Image 1 (cartoon, rainbow, N blue to C red):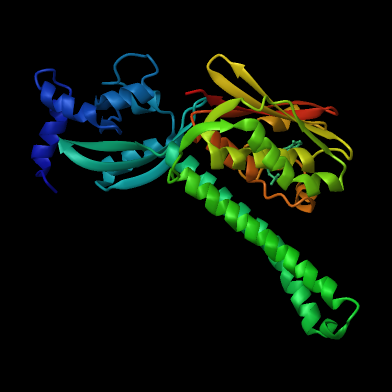
Image 2 (cartoon, protein in one colour):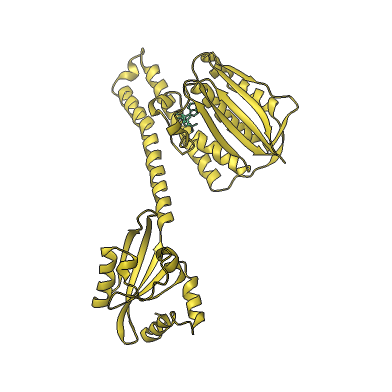
Length: 357
Ligand code: ADP
């Protein structure tokens, strides 16, 4: 304890008095909402954060009942208990009807001008809680995604151990399944590492004037076998001299991802068309396919990590559900953005928008 109880009490008491603007200033600089409540459960002092969070434009909080400002039985009981039993209470509450916020609340008793009071500190943990949820979901997604290929690997190893190793007709096939699943895990882990590296901000961006037609042709070459298997025609109409201002390696990664998706989610003998347009002072590269399209309800979510329209199908075509999340981050790192438009039954177009120098 830094202050004796009476000193601390008198300081808190003085926050209401305009004659002590320094103390009111100090309490007001706290980001946490602070309330002092008396024995009749009325608010005796508060700070600006409390006012902002709970007054809802209804003027001063002082001398109003706590229950009138925050209607929550548990909170009321905790203040009551702290005043009556002279003990500290900690609780986590969701407060608010429309704009729900989560608070960690610490309530402590103290004497103020000879009578029992309690002071409550409201720490807004809404954002922390949201991030924690995102982290947990991410971890559970990763575990799930890794478990599927791993289960398959273990099952086939056991089958081999149980005698299939001598079954010359099938042993190679089983080994092949094991290899494919191990490769899948490898790709997944590489994507996870890549994403966390990008999200941590530890990637350098080195922009130059990239000859887009040349880059697109190189990517077409590297994906030609895959496109050929399904007779998908890869085309572009970009002027050989057109340049975009971007990090070459990162742009290649983004376009490879989008063109690869445009092949994977296309119909047989469909087409992929890459174009470049200038809109204001931005370059817009579009990658259009003639696939099934994406329903409007999914469009807003496909850039989320692990979001896939059809898990079974995507696994078959070897997707991790992380590609578009990586593309989005890479675009933003370069001051740009990625958007998508889709016509059900006709196809999907992704747009990479990048600022010109
Ligand atoms: P994946 O590794 O599964 O391809 P992405 O993040 O690249 O992961 O894509 C997420 C999901 O968005 C895909 O699983 C697929 O359902 C959908 N999707 C992506 N690109 C297309 C496309 N061109 N046409 C239709 N659906 C697509």
